Amino acid sequence: MNVIHQQALSESTTLYELDGHIQSIYLVKQADKLLLLDGCCRADVNDLSTFIRSTLGLPLCALSLVVVTHMHPDHAGAAHKLRQLTGAKIASANVSGHWYTGLDGILMHITDIALAGWVAKRKGKPRRYLWYSRKLHPDILLDDNDTLPGFPEWQVLFTQGHTDRDLSIYHSTSHKVYVADLMVTVKGRYIPPFPLFYPRRYRESLERIEALNPDSIILAHGGEVHPTHNDYQHLFEKAPKVPLTHWRSVKIKLRKVLFNK
Image 1 (cartoon, rainbow, N blue to C red):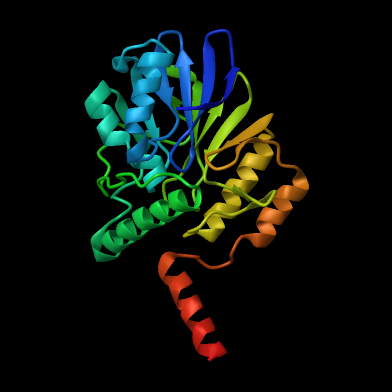
Image 2: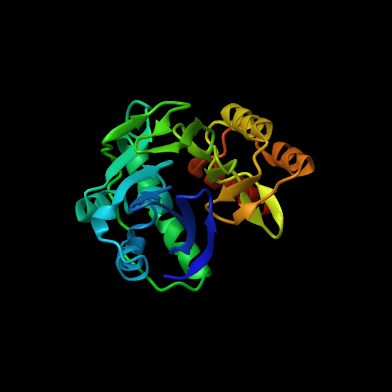
């Protein structure tokens, strides 16, 4: 697994950005224990395990906490398997219910896995096993402004909008914040993620991160960045006013096809 970037966040804390299957993986080394800032893809398990053992020279049990910022395949896909292999605890937002519930949830789960496979193909990645449980069973439920158990430099921020349970993780010492999919980069510009289920919450989340005024923002898709006020304004302009979901997107495309005909 390639190291994209490595940096010291404090005297005892190092952050590794690793090249995951379709996203950056952020692994924190604090003394002799490890924190994973997101649950990765199911396809990342073997490579991440090799990195921990061979590159860092640590046993797999050094991984003590896996945060799941939301339930999409590249953020939750490896969580259960990593817990099984390492004994790590899984932490996620204290939001009731499961994201992928009911028949709609089953179909959305399948669609999201298929989309992850499509993204991997576009990135030239080999075909890999991506299936994971649509129901997360965390060990730790996190509330807004909580600190991560065992990692007190890291604070939880609720930044919902993409889904109903999105988390950002703020490192108080370095004043950097990992925002997962709050924004993505396309052709050098920041755009809102897809899907976006809660437009009002999304705008509030953007406002919260801009008001935090961090030294840098760390993206799951785009690395470490430094958005300006104009970049935030662009995000607000591009953010939909109504939910942009899988089914709504399909209906819009169907209307365009019918109209063109």
